[in-house]
Image 1 (cartoon, helix red, strand yellow):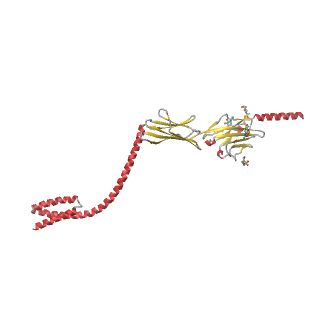
Image 2 (spheres, helix red, strand yellow):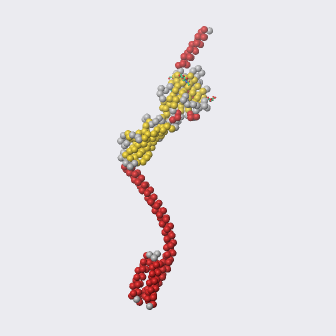
Length: 345
Ligand SMILES: *[C@@H]1O[C@H](CO)[C@@H](O)[C@H](O)[C@H]1NC(C)=O
Ligand SMILES: *[C@@H]1O[C@H](CO)[C@@H](O)[C@H](O)[C@H]1NC(C)=O
Ligand SMILES: *[C@@H]1O[C@H](CO)[C@@H](O)[C@H](O)[C@H]1NC(C)=O
Ligand SMILES: *[C@@H]1O[C@H](CO)[C@@H](O)[C@H](O)[C@H]1NC(C)=O
């Protein structure tokens, strides 16, 4: 009886001492995950006993409703899992046999960054470990340079933008020789896809190539803009040309308005003219008749010939100044009448 009791005590003692030995291997430092990629949150029991019969819980202690993954009673129990981890977590059940409760997280997001806890519970003991995750969204967008304008001293105002980085990237401007140029204004913003960065700079256009480089650790994206006189001048010329075009368009507009008004006036005048022309044609006929008469009289009288010549000159004036034809006609008529009287005499 004593022996059995002693044996029991020894067994209990061994079990107790064993259970206290278990621990979870915890990463010494923050672990880095890449946005968009899959990532394994490490957690394994040491010594490597099977945890298949245990409860494995992954959660984020800093967040509410923070269940990332739950394994209990030999299966995954994810009805209460946080929405943002739905369909993105996987526990390798074969690895559980080797004390490995590492959790695979698919398509990592910047919002996955933070503190995770891996909790392993058996009926008699429980261990836990903390994993600090940093998400690097190194695949930020390539920087985009835009020309904001240029001033009178032919200096270019440039702006360079890039987004989707995490953590904050460095942005730098470099000239064609690779010398760093200092930014005029800098801007850093954080949103759900990470950090976006925007810097501006003013350069002389003789610096023919300007690079904008965005760096994060060993990742780098770069864009360059060619601002040499060859490309700069046509650009300026095109601005001047387009200014000229604008001026021309304005002038054309004014001319068109004037033309429309003139055309209207012209049409009115034309109507008047048509009436006058008819009168004029009648006058011309009369004139021709008068001319015939005059020709007859020409032979008779030298004086009349002179008069006739004078009349002819006047007739030419009539042709040119149609508006005055009426008056001239009257005058001619008067002259003719006088001549008629004279010839009758
Ligand atoms: C989910 O949460 C509810 C309420 O907190 C609880 O009753 C239920 O057992 C949980 N389900 C699982 C699978 O843990
Ligand atoms: C634990 O399991 C994961 C797969 O789920 C594997 O990638 C990892 O190497 C394992 N860790 C150890 C220490 O065996
Ligand atoms: C535990 O690890 C040892 C050596 O590292 C290995 O020989 C043994 O098979 C492992 N046990 C299990 C259950 O995986
Ligand atoms: C994690 O383990 C520590 C001791 O190592 C304990 O104080 C703490 O309460 C445990 N946390 C949880 C959530 O079990």
